[in-house]
Structure formats: C-alpha cells, structure tokens
Length: 218
Image (cartoon, rainbow, N blue to C red; front, side):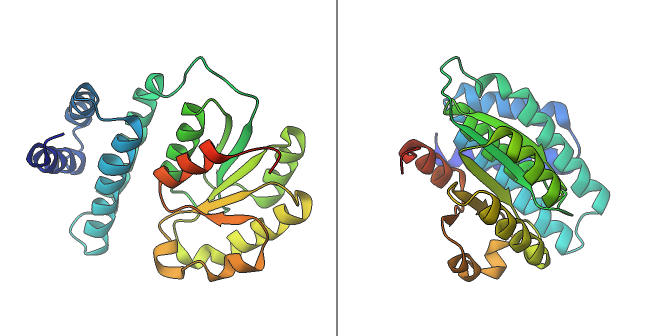
C-alpha cells in the first residue's frame, strides 16, 4: 500500500474513531482490505496503532473516558465485522485458551491474538476480560489446551499475572504460556525468567511465527 495513502487513511480512521463514527470506520476498514491489506496488518497497523493513539490522547486529557470507551467499542465491533475473513475451513486439532488476567478489562488485544490462532486453523477458546485464575484453571482442565495466551495491559496488575502464570505452570507443567500486552512496555520481561516455557510475544507477527513453528512434540 502506498505510504502516503496509508498515513492519510490512518489519520482519517483515527479521527473517525474519536468522533464515534462507526459507519466511516467500517468503510475505511473495508477499503483497507479491498486494497490487499492482510487481517494481521489491519489489526497491527490500523486497529492497534489507532487504539494506542487514543490511549495517549486520554492520558494527556485530550479526550474523555467516554470517548476512549466508545473508540474501543467501535474497534471491537470491527473485529466482529471482519471475522468472516478470519475463520477458515482448514482446521487442525490444536487448541489454545486466550484470556485477560483478573481485573483486566481491555480485551481487544487478546481478541486479536485469538483471531490469529483461528486464522491458522486452531480451535481458540476466547475467555475475554477479567477471568479469575481459578475459573481459568477449571476450564482448562476440561479442555486440556496445547497453549495458553494471556494479556496484561495495566502494569500494576503484574502480581495477578504472576499468580496466574505460577498456578498454570503447576497445573499444566508442559504447555507453553504466551504473555503480552501494553504493560510490558513499562515492566519489561525479567520476571519471566522464573518460569519454564513462559514466552513474551510483543505483536501479532511474533504470535503468528510461534504458531507456524509450534509442534506438540516439542
């Protein structure tokens, strides 16, 4: 895609998002896909970047909480709108559970991760926001997934993530646990060294590479 057009379209999308114009955001999304942008690029370069911009505007008191919530709701609706481009007929037996940690309500990023697994033919169980650790473990014992993927958006929820990771590592000692989210920009990755097979993945491309290289046999 032409770089100038990309910049113009990104600003147009962001402005429409802040204005709460879902119809315009939907039209821009369809235009991106019509010009050959992949779902992963749409998620990473358009939705994710726009939401980061919205978050920064909110932090600088340039927009209200209501506007930030509306922007998030519109992007989530666009994820649902594009789902037909995500799901395919070629399915495999691999399973993943994707979830936010307890007290985390920003679920858009982990929903994108779930969709990337789906695009690769996996059966993805998306538990969404604010999932208690005990409920996650209980559900996982029924599913016995091949992989876990967890999202952390707010850095001071790190102790909750550590509790979840520690519990999962005890209950499911072999399965990889992928972690990511905006909070890792502030907290770093040092705590992951305490755990075996807990992997930080910063973006959807790294998730996609993990999936393509994954083997149940190690």
